[in-house]
Length: 330
Image (cartoon, one colour):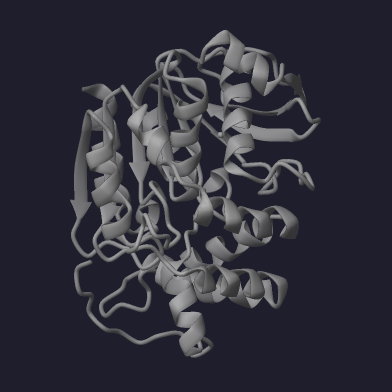
């Protein structure tokens, strides 16, 4: 892992919390049989099974266990599906959705179950179910030749989607600050983060999660680094999105993003893939994520943003937008 410049840290962060904040992921669900396995989705809230292209719509689908998944569907053209990070929601992708939809793409983003406007199921808060929920949404909208883009935990979601449902409906894949292959330290992954980091994350969630999220926004966007130009309003938006996540879903997701080994799923990726990561990511360190994932995926291109933090969608918006557009158009 490359060395990082030191900077002022949030006064609420104890030494143990600093380890915690520096290592958690913020941000992280085909063939016909796979779609049937995911359950036949039921569309609600005025949504049709296939949203009309060119219309800016919002709606929900209902998964096989009855959980409603909120999504928004902007623009017209080849589909691009966005999966957000923990503990945010689809709104974290608004800048990228607006940009790509304005350049001739149909952009779809959903709130993961337990997050944002989607249902807060007691069970199913794991990467297998997240991937199946994504499969249900893709099938409901009958998306084909889609580019799947996942940030942080969302990167794990789209990777597990490929592992479980294949690439029949997928054109390309993009992993942004993503969690694969595995965050947790194990004998097979000696450079991962120790379980105590994630135990502390759970403790923070079970305690004062409002303060926890406020503290987390600083390393997420690199606010604690010298020269940061991130506004307090960006941090406030992060806090608002985070507080919309249900406690049970957000709590369970910690285990999902930290302990799920996606190594074999990465090996199944057989479409062009772009891996984007900042080399000053304090949430998902690049050395044990993008640098490994880009080698496990057969046809991957690695693009490192020097000095960039985890929340690239805001801090490096123009660069990310242009990179996504260039990759989608290639």
